Image (cartoon, rainbow, N blue to C red; front, side, top):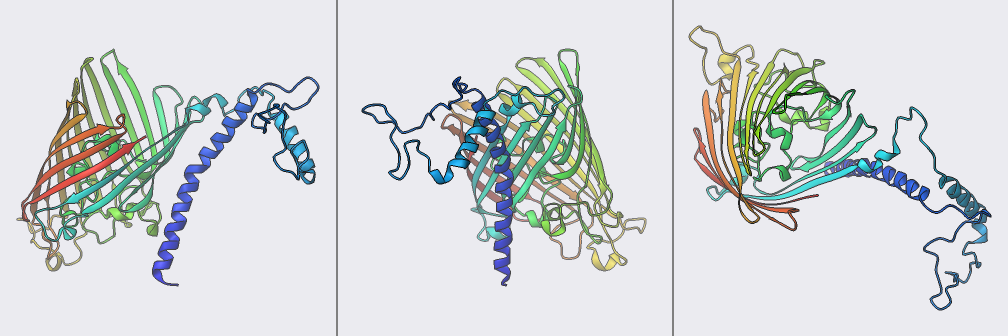
Length: 471
């Protein structure tokens, strides 16, 4: 069979599984809701007769029932199906009885109404007026980002969430986890999820930020020269299998603390890698499992200071450590710090993130690396990639909002022969954007202009025009 046909069949099966995954809980909940509605209908008459259905055809002249088909009897049912029809009526009469939940029943039917289905979709057009070959520099043109989430409270202390997303990499499972709260201040999470690392990854959906793309330290596929830079420091969303524990603690009335620890499968790469291979974290070809039988560990500490009702400040620090190669010889350490200030309707955000990555130098690094050893005659096996952003967003007038951002990245470390990067390479980007909200704030029109200042390449200008809808 041709390779393209196999690929189409694989994509079709994947799409079908995702549709079933999303619709099955909805059908289940709809069935429960229907059963509850049946319990609230008037009870049958004292003689046991079933009341006529509300949608039974009525003659507008005399109000008498009219058969819907000449081949049916006056009762409106076919004799061939009488036994089945009677069984259904008996089951319906039985279902109209009110059943009190048994003691210790793990499922509370009153929580069915807490099911939440939400999502957002963004169509973005990226245009590079400074380049005649934009496809070689970035994923220009139209791209779509879709996010669909289904969440439900199973009990007062247990909840579940399933989320799927679609972007240039195709359909992916963005989350599938169970949350348990043994006490109000403690949350335990297990499954596939975005770990609580940094500020931006917690709001990465396109409806939650004002630009079409993400800050450079968290960019995934939209930055110019993404291939030369191997994308960003930590492309968002970073989704992984694992376990996370969070403790929330109030200190007085003006300080809220959050302590989070997580154990994950970790980032992935090859045994001879010079950097992380982010594609390995989201490709079914290698399965969605750990590649070295060793988890990565990390955590986050966050403090919210309520100075006054119109002014709050949030400070956060995050870390992640582990090995990313199958042989567990190449380690990686990521640290980040973030700051968020909200004053009335103005929000100021700043974040710094750094990733220290061990490289596989091989037996003869002098034959493969661009630069020689240090003054001590030893090759440095580590590279350091640091990123930052500072962003301000505020309403301007009416339904118009504005955002301004400065972000950048800097890389230190040896590179392979022929690499376009140097031992020290940097990029700065300046962004200004406007948003227009319409249709009861359900839709948002995004426009932004970006200026890239590269140390190793010619400067570039990028223009984004996006439309995002949320529900």
